[in-house]
Length: 184
Image 1 (cartoon, one colour):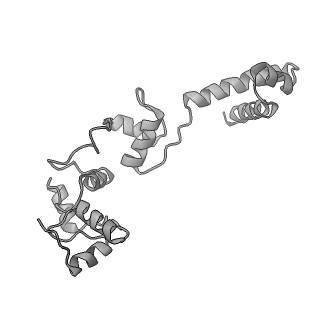
Image 2 (cartoon, helix red, strand yellow):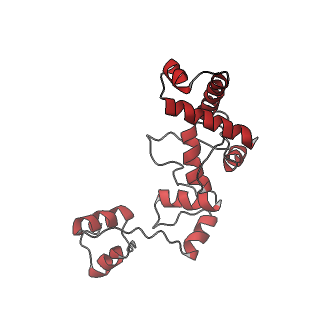
Image 3 (spheres, helix red, strand yellow):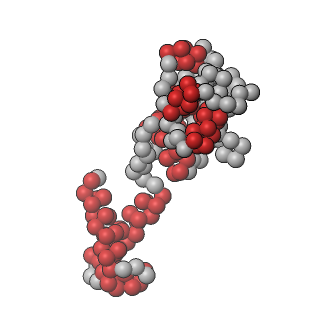
């Protein structure tokens, strides 16, 4: 086990590269000890990519880097690479059909909003903006109720007091409801 760092190795960690015979964790620790900001070099060489495609984990990449690259590029994880970050994280598996729903910003049955946000970020490299969430549906229903009360002659201030809201919030919900009916 190496303990002293050569000038060449220190110059490499300044560039965010892992010297031969060292691990990423050692480089991060050494750079921290020396007050050098660790700039992770996430670039992949052609040889490392070929190794991944052949089912071999490149020795200088962490499991997290390998998982991220494989997910981004649709490559199967090599043998020996842990499919999740750690024992505390619950692994959620996604089928191709569920991922296709996420591409359309639809929450698949049995998945939570937060799981969908995470999966879009990790697997699809996109944001997640569902059009119909339970919360949005509830807001739309309230907007409809408030609109009907207002249309029947009740003042917005009276509706607000009855439902424990501000007059401005009642106005917002009515406006959102009216905008949603225009879109359809």
